[in-house]
Length: 562
Image (cartoon, rainbow, N blue to C red; front, side, top):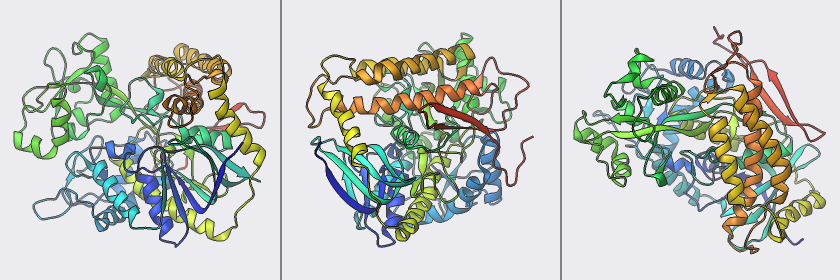
């Protein structure tokens, strides 16, 4: 099996907000940094983040401070957060937003010229810094320009498929050049995983097409610990129609600027559920409220609720929600005059690769940052904390990877392992009979949406577990690509992704069955009333190849669960 070997000091897998920030930090140490991206540089899912970045500057509400931000993060996460990680987030966020400004990012300003801040759900103060409703795009444009001013070597449209580990230490990755179909091995002294989330394991999601759980799957196969994989945030407001846009994000900034939720009777229904905070309740709370209205017959004609900002001054809407106007104009809706139809959509993984305060994993030399990690956000992420996460822990992972790379030499790699990996990928092209990746993915995403969604119960989740085990055993080994061509073959790319999707979906479903009570985004209609659920669930691949799960005590530094 022919493949090309490429050497570097630091390898960053993923080129979103966290990956770019890690690569920049690594390059600041005068090391040879390579960054891999499955898509063209700048197209990562971070660019789709709209509402803003949490940072307790106190520019609008002077009483805000990191301590309050920390408290909001822990209570918002239903006390499941690793509090050490949360402390670092709230303390470092200010410096990271100043870094972005130094790189050229332009945020909206107050009349005094300070960075403007808007309210987001379950937060004590107006804390979310923003650039209209295109904050993620502004950050990505800024980071890409900064990358181009460094020595970072960017390999875009390259798909990492397997982590290489030598004697318990990271040594590189196997990858495929999607443009030409060439097999590549990147050998590195340290590796940063920044592969994003996995919303695409659900049929309705706000996530980009490539967010399929590659990082979770690769980390699991390599022997990493993964934490709280059952904790999936369903954003309460995704588009309902047209069908081609179903699940597309409707930013929380709409509610932050004063948008109200209405049912088919014209009632502002949030007063029934969370009267003190109304539309600015936690994302899990608002999502469940909308679905309850739908299930009880008070939903919109297309199975959602109405979100209206028609009562706001048009000047505010046009200035602060510009992209929302454009997004709904494509659907024939003028949001300045009429309400939007919205319903929950799979949005963010709170769970992921377990990391420490230095963004390190249990594999020496392997670091991780951004949405592919778990522990920071607990049971439910605050809106605005994700972009802060990418910058704070992107910088930390890059710094840690650089320090490690300076302390070690390149390790050898097992050629048999590499050959076996590329033979596995090649077999998908050469198989005479089998199942198409499109059909297999359709079955999996519908299964997850129907059985492991917002309202969960044992019978449904166990059915999903059983089906996923069957898919892993019978479908994964029989994936067949219809067109046996390596050069930019989307069917082959989907087939490679499917393996990671199945592994990720299994971890989500298995952990969801294990957690018998409701906590955070994990809401069981058949919850054990005696289970408060103050623990984390850790998953890893056992030596016998079986999935192992255990409960671990919370990491508590300041706030004890009630």
